Length: 55
Image (cartoon, rainbow, N blue to C red; front, top):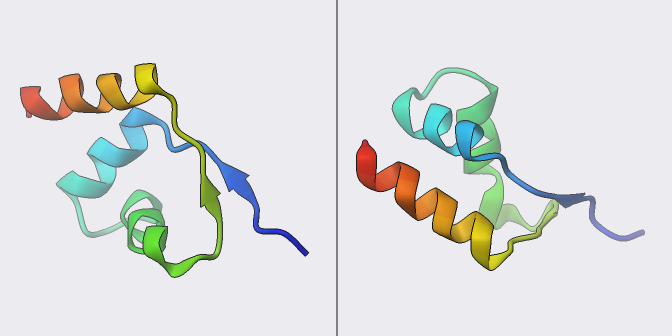
């Protein structure tokens, strides 16, 4: 069976980086486990970059 395919919303990344409590942080800790495949696009990565530079 194949891994679930996901796209991580920018707000989830920000929430996960701001607090070690909650589901957003838990999701980020699972990113490199191979439990799911993350789908990215150039516009999404640029959005991540833009938002994270503002923090």
